[in-house]
Amino acid sequence: MLSLVGSRSIRWFRTVLPVKYSVVTGGHTYVTQPTEEAIGRHLNSRQPYAGSLFACRIHAGSFRSYCTAHTKLSCWKCQQTFEERPVFFCPRCKVVQPPDESASHFQILDSTHSFTLDTQKLQKRYLQLQRSLHPDNFSQCTKEEQQHSEDQSALLNRAYRTLLKPLTRGLYMLELEGMPLEEGTDPGADPGLLMELMELNEAVEEAVTPEEATRIGQDTKVRLKELTAQIDTALHRGEHEAAKALLIQMKYFANVEEKVKEQLSKLM
Image (cartoon, rainbow, N blue to C red):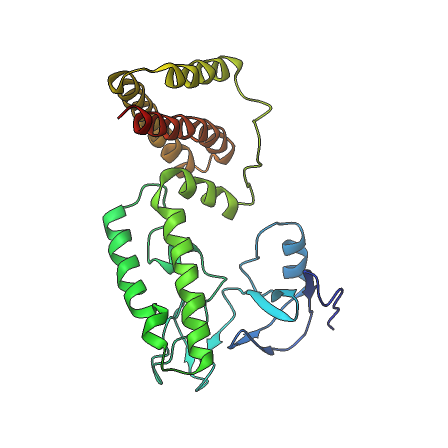
C-alpha cells in the first residue's frame, strides 16, 4: 500500500507489505521487507531506521533512498547484486554506480565512526577515490555513467570536507544521532563564556601587531585542543547532550580563530 502526497515537493512515503518488495530507483534495485513495527519506530525517530523499513524521499520525480541494513543493491546495468556497500564500481561489469545516499560519510571514506580520526589516512582514501571517480575519467562514457561519476564525486567531496575538521565532524555525528545544532546563539550558553568570547573578539579587532594577533591565536588553539579532547570523551561515552554543549563552545572559538587569521592577513 503506497501513498504519495505532493509529487513535486518533498514527501515521505511508506509501504507496509507482507512480502519482499523491489523498487528500482536512482539506478539501483532495492529489495526490502517492511513491517508495521519498523515503520512505528521510524516515525518516532528523525533518522532512517536500521531495520526492515523501506523509506524514500521524492523530489520533483526523483528518488533519494534512505535504505536499511536489510536492503540489497544491484548494478543498474548488469543487475549484479552487491554484498558490500557502499559500492563505487560494479565488480562484474566495472561501470560506475550511483551514490548510495544511505551510507554515512564515515562509510564512504572507509573510516571508523569516531570523533578522533587519522586525517592522513582519511586524505589518502579521499584522493584514491577521487582519482577513480573524477568526471574527467568518464567523458567518453554514457550519459548515465557521466552523471553517476559527477554525483559520486560531489558526495565524496562533501564527505571529506565534513570529516576533515573536528567541528564539522562532531556536528555531523550529532546529526546522525538526530541532534542537529540549530543556527544562532545558544540560549543556554554560560554568560561568563559569552563575556570571554566578546573580549577575545574585541582583542582580535584591536590587535595592532602580528605578534598580538598570533598570541591570541595560539591561546585559542590551546582551547580548541582541550575542547577536542572533551568532546571525544563525551561522544565515546554516548553523552550526546554534553557533546552538543561542548561543540557549541568549539564553534565559538573556531570563529575566533578565523578572525585571528583575517586580522593577521591585514597586519602582514
